[in-house]
Amino acid sequence: MARIRWRALPTAGVLLATGALVASLAPLATAGTTTTWHIVAADVVESARLAEDVIKGIDSTITTVEYRKGGEGNIEVCGFERTERISSSRQARWTASGRVGSTLILQFQAVVDGTNAFARLKQAYLNCTADSFGGTAPADRVTVKGTFSKRKKQLKLTWALYTSSAKTETVRAEGLAIKRAGGALIITRSITKDITTLNGAVNQQLTARQFAKYKAAAYS
Image (cartoon, rainbow, N blue to C red; front, side, top):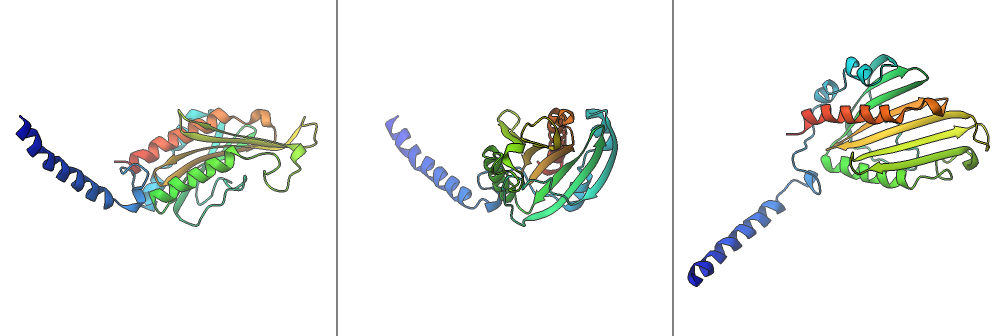
C-alpha cells in the first residue's frame, strides 16, 4: 500500500502543474471574474433591452417608452471617473406619473473593464456625501445616500436638492439602481421634482429584470 501511495504522488504533481499552466493561460478579460460572461455584439445588446409591455408590467404608471442609443445614466454625480472603454450603450426611456427615467445597458469592451467600473462606482457612491455631491450644490440643501445590497448585488443612490436648508421642498430628486452584468453595467435612473414620487423599488425591479434579460444573451 505504501508503494501505491508513493507512485500516485508524481501524477498528482503533474495534474497540479498542468492546472497552474492552464490558469496562467486564462484570458486577461476574465481575471477576477467568472469565465462564463462574454461581450456581445451591439445588435445583441440592442435586442436585449426590455420590451415595453415588460416595463409597463413592472410599473403600471409608466405611460410611454422610447428606445434610444447612448446615455450614461448620470453615473458621475459622486466623483466617479469612468474611462472611455464602452463598446455599446442602449437604453429605454420611460415616462411615469410625476417622474421620468431610463433603463440602460452600458457595455464595456471587456469583462474586466465592467468589473473595475462597478468597483469604482461602489466606492464613490458609498462615500458620497452632501459636501461632495455634484460639486456645486450647497451642502445644506442636499441629501444623498448610497447603499449596496449584498443579496441583490445591486448599488443604489438616492439624492435630492431642496429649495432651502429647511429641506421641506425639493427642486429635484434622483434615484439610481445599478448592477454589474459581466462586462456591462445595468442602470435604471429616475428623476422627479417631488422626492415623495421617487419610486426606488421600481428602479431596482427594472434593473433586476434588465439584468436577467441581458444575462440570457451574454452568459453561457
